[in-house]
Structure formats: C-alpha cells, structure tokens
Amino acid sequence: MKAEKAYYVCSECGEGSAQWLGRCPACGSFGTMARESREPPGRRSALSAARPLRMVELGDEAPRLRIGIPELDRVLGGGAVPGSLVLLGGEPGIGKSTLLLQAAHALSAGGARVLLVSGEESASQIASRARRIGCLHPELYLLCETDLGRVEEVVGDLEPRVVVLDSLQTVRCPEVDSAPGGVSQMRESVLRLQVLAKESGATVFLVGHVTKEGLLAGPRLVEHMVDCVLYFEGERFDSLRVLRAVKNRFGSVSEVGIFEMTDGGLREVEDPSRHFLDRRSEPVSGTAAAVVMEGRRPLVVEVQALVVPSKLPAPKRVSTGIDQRRLAIDVAVLERKGRIKLDDRDVYVGISGGLRIVEPALDLAVCAAVASSRRDRALPAGTVLVGEVSLTGEVRPVSRMEERLREASRLGFTRAVISAGSHRRARLSGMEAVEVEDVKDTLVCLGIYAQDR
Ligand code: TYD
Ligand code: MG
Image 1 (cartoon, rainbow, N blue to C red):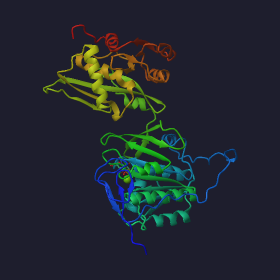
Image 2: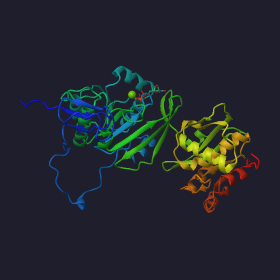
Image 3: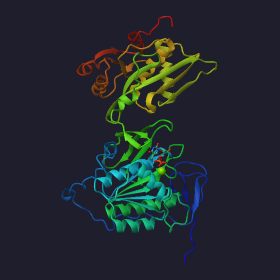
C-alpha cells in the first residue's frame, strides 16, 4: 500500500494544498491550513457517465413540492425542488430546528413522507417538542443518527420525499477519519448527500450553524455545493424571525419570509407592516415612518432616534438594524446641510420590531427622526418619508415608489415626503405627495428647520 500523502485544507474556505502554508493562497486567512489525513475525494459526478443532451428535447423540471407554509414556499421560489439540496443557516437557538420540524409536519400532513434526521437532540426531546407544538403525524419519521452511511440506508428503505438533516456539523462519514464538523467531513458529506438527493429524488434540507462572524461554521465551500442557501435571522430577545434566500438555483434571491416565535412554535406574520409600526395615538418626537422593500414586498417601518448631550470628545453614533456607517453619513449630512447641530450629541437610532435594513431608501426617515429628536418636535401625523440621501444632501428617487406608497396608504398614512419627480406615482396611490429636493427642504416641510440652529 502506498504511504499516505500529507494534505492540508484551509478551515475557512476549503482550499487544499500539498504542503503546509502559513497563509491560505485562496482566501488569505492566516494559520487556517490544517493537515488532513487523506487526499481530497476529488470531483465525483453525481450522475455517472453524463452525455450531451438536446435542450429542446428536455421537458420542464419536475413539479415542485409545496411545503404548505406559504412564507417558506415563497422564499424557496414556489416550493421544494425534488432532488435538490437546501442549506438552512442561522445562529444557534434562532429556530432552525423548529422551522424545519414545522415544515416536515406540514409536508406530512399534505401526504408526503418525511424523514427527520437529528444528530443534535434525542428522539424523546424532539418528539415531546413536536407533540407540544402540534407537529406529530404518522408519515413523519425520526432517525437519531450521525453516521451518513446509515442515513443513506434508511432513505433507501423508507423512500421519503423530503429528508431533513439537523445538522450538517454533526453528521460524519466513517470513511473520512477526521472530526465531525471539519472541512473534509463536511465536503464529503455534502457530496454524498448530493448523490443521495439525485438518486432518491428527495429534497434534502441541511441545517448549518452560523458563527458570530456571520459565516457558516466551517467552509463557505458548502454554500457553493448546494442548490439553495437560506438564512434564518433575528434578534435573540425579539420574537421576530426573517428567512432570506441568499442563493437559489431555482428562484429569486430577493424573497423574504417573516415569522414570529411564539410558545406554540413559529407563526407566519401575515401583515408585517402592522407588526413593525408602533401604534400610538399621538406622534412623538424622534420617530419617523418609512417604506422599505424586503424582497418584493413593501414594509412600513418606524425609525426611532434618540439624541442626547454627549460628554465624549467623539460623540457616539449607535445604530441597531441599520448600518453604522450609513448613520454616520446621515448625521454628517444633517449637520452640514440641515443646520442641525450634532457634534456635541450622542445619536442612537433603531428600527422598531428588530428588523435589519440595508436599503438606502431609509435615509430620509433616519434624517427626519434624528432631527425630530434633536429639536424635540414630533413630525406631522400620518407622514411617511421615502428617499435616499446623497452626500451632497440631495434626496434621490428610489425604485417601486408606487408599491411603497400604496402600502403606506393602506395603513392609514396620508402624506408622503418623497424626492422631486416621484409625484405622478404618488398621486396614483391616493396620498398627498410633498416633493423635496434636499435635506433642508425636507426639514422645512416637516416644520423642524431652524435658520439659527
Ligand atoms: P430551535 O429551533 O431549537 O433553534 P436552532 O435549531 O436554530 O438552534 O429553537 C430554539 C429556541 O426557540 C429556544 O430558545 C426556544 C424557542 N422556542 C420557542 O420559543 N417556542 C417554541 O415553540 C419552540 C419549539 C422553541
Ligand atoms: Mg437546532
């Protein structure tokens, strides 16, 4: 027998090398190359002996399997694709196991046989949770196992339409003698699961834990190997959960699903805008409403700001739910163009409901909320603000204005502060539109601009 060659694999990105290197040549991380006991498995084709096909002769892809949880089906692009691999990532405790348990139950209730494989919890733990949240069904099977070979056997016998594997970090292939959760274990497991999905025609859902840095623990490589990557996000102490597709070979990646964690498991949030608006009879200073797009769905959210005297030479700019740099820019623009003095103030900004928003369309509402808190004057009731603010203080138009304003109008808003040129669309939605050129204009029309600051 040939002596085993040394082989090194980067624990961050999965790059391999025949010699040890201090720095990974692919991702540039230092000290991440670790020795593996065997050479990489190599590229094994999931379908052996492929041959060229005439595309015109191919039928449409197999019909999708509806899961029966509309928010989840939408994020998947219309249901689960048979034979595909879906990775569900998220921080520990966010609700991945719960979501997939509920999905498994909905599927089995719809007549599809489902196999849940868990390497994380005991059978009785899972069963009692399933009983508690009403997720038991005769077509729902549970296997507590970490050996992938055994999982393959069971799938062969049981012929489920869907397999849920919780989690990728706990399964192992005994043939690969490194610890579960390591790069080569995961790569080999995913390769074998690809074959399993293709051969059995089952959709395989894989749970993957995410580390603090926001990456799947282990290699990014897994994301490249699967067909669909979903992330389940939320603040730990808030009940709101957002499911996002970050990769989808069979659909759009702009869709999101919104859930709420309750005592009885996850519940779909049917009217998210109402969920994100703090209902109060009188407007208070430091709040401003905006309409953002989450995927293709408009959402009305409330920006909350608190501006207080600072004792620090470099006052604080603290944000939750929006990008810190974005806030710093909005604050700088307000100072310079809006004559709002903030260089001796700490500024705190958050989004109600614990949502995280990256859309620049929120800028105008952030500026308005900060200015409103600084002047301690509430904005006029029934007003939403939608617009991106540039470094020069100009208010820029944003996409899908009509849909946004229709949503705001549905929730009872009557006045929209928007960029110049968006008027025609606003009229269609039946709201009063106030067009603004820049930040100063905006503050003037909100009644919080002061000549003397
Ligand atoms: P879980 O699905 O186990 O998270 P993950 O698999 O992502 O680690 O969910 C864990 C949390 O959800 C746990 O802290 C308790 C909470 N939870 C509820 O609040 N209600 C419920 O009905 C369930 C099942 C869980
Ligand atoms: Mg879990």
